[in-house]
Length: 140
Image (cartoon, rainbow, N blue to C red; front, top):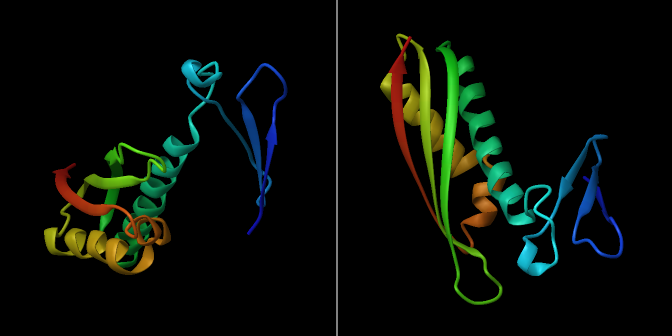
């Protein structure tokens, strides 16, 4: 896996990432650090990637379990250390899974498997953060 980060130049704290799969994304810092708030901050992208990684696992596991899923949302709330490096210290992933006749046990199992086995992002972040999750199931 590879990713190239390019600074956008003098007078900015903006960066462009070119991913190994050929996609681009922008990052920027807050105004008090010289940024213009024109794009997500790098730590926000780590949090977003974590939610995406886990949601991907949950949907795939549920589909393989023949569950009819129509939506899967994850809201992540995180706390960071007060001092540098300001690593994540707590992260909660709140899953809202919507579908037809969803089996609560299968949804809980999917989230647990993502959390304990498949999600590389939560596994890495668990080195510094307490990772928790909650689940809501909504019927179509």
